[in-house]
Amino acid sequence: MHVASSTFAADDVASRSDRIGRGIALALAVYLTLVTWPIWRHTAASGATLPLVVHLTILGYTLVLLAAPVRLRRPALDWLTLTIGPVMYIELRWIIAGLGLPHRDSVVVGWERLLFPTNPSATLAPRLHVASVSELLHLAYASYYLLIYLPPIALFLRGRREAFVSTMLALTVVYGVCFVTYALFPVDGPRYLVGAAAAPEGPIRSFVLTLLDRGSSRGTAFPSSHVAASVVSSLCALRFQRRVGIAVTLVTAALIVATVYGGFHYAVDALVGVILGGLTWLVSAGILEKLASRAAQSATAA
Image (tube, rainbow, N blue to C red; front, side, top):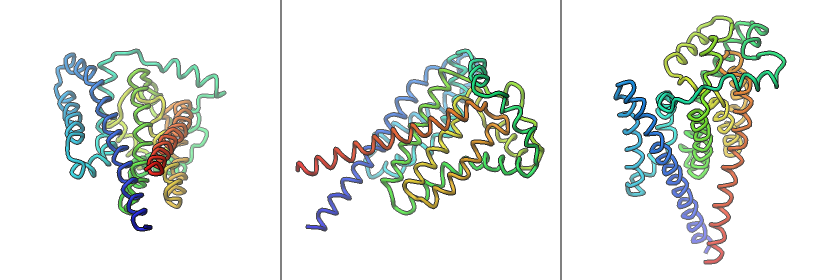
């Protein structure tokens, strides 16, 4: 009886994880479908076909996964957000250009002046002009992808699929909110308008600046997705793997400071990123609790 009950519970967890994974893919497919129009507009205006080809490729990949048999699509579906996420970020530059909405730096700067006596993105680095501090903060900023990818990889390798899928859900929600905000409320950020902050030079800082020059998308400053996603990753890791979570949280705290210290974001961008990350985690946890509660009620009724 106990074995049968345990098997039923495991099957229920697997089924719930599959539903969450499919829901994530559906949400991504809807988003990718909606943003096809501004990317097509950008392609028509610029004459460059690569943006549209890249976009249709990841949209097609997502639709194929949704149509594939469950056993074949499960691993790819589980990793979908982190597989196509970097490409989705890059194509924001085409979406923002295609929509052609005005950039709202003046609005965010107004909020900055209301909340802070000085401009932290311009004054923090000169006030804390220490090479070792600068390099450590820029290292934390450069560790962003490690903060996002390593905790889910650890869960995946340990076979904790429900915790893994739960983390993917939270990351998908936070990226979705950020990306939609960028499209409708583009903000360039101080690095584009006045340049990076006057921090001490160093090899790590130089690497970060080169990386941003090559990979960042203009108009994606508010809120900071680096901060929001790192906060989500920290909270999920603290919930599912505490030791990993503590390490991720410490680096995330340094990353939050680094986004402003380096002049990559306004302080408001980082502040809203922290709030958004926390709210996203709460919403995602609430969704998971409701799904688990419904499953328990169904099991009891059966």
